[in-house]
Image (cartoon, rainbow, N blue to C red; front, side, top):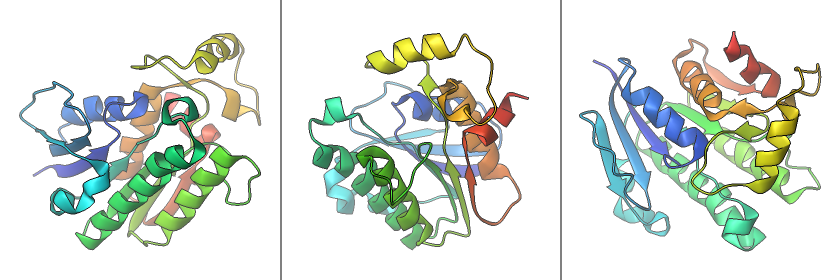
Length: 217
């Protein structure tokens, strides 16, 4: 019997690749995704829940299984304000993690960001640091924090800076200690997420950009 995975952020760059991997991985028997709009994907393993993230009480009972993949996120431009961005990137993800813990899920994988730090002077990296800190407090038996470098790959909405900087940086070799600016594909990050979920470690661990790049081998 395979594992049941819960995934939020299934329409994003990394989340969509996690979904694709999971649907084609025999280690999973069921994948539940929680989305604001239908993906249009049909598959025998897939359960799609179209939900309102502000109304968690209506669907939290379905957050059950073995592994929770949390890959939700937005940009400041899309959100409009820092406060609105934090609701998506911090509040929604923390609330789902809390519900998963209450419902008995034991394996948590979070897609975070390089240099996430609660003491950061940058709003984005501080927000990511705050989320890491608070999900770790939930004490899942197994927690993987994935901090990829600059993401590259097709998005529903093009991010201009990432598009052009990714092209430029992608032409240079991996430079030691500068892995956080080395572009990585959504597929590679998804691969790191899934393999970390199935790794035999217990407790909490963080995969920094350099660690994520090891999955290229």
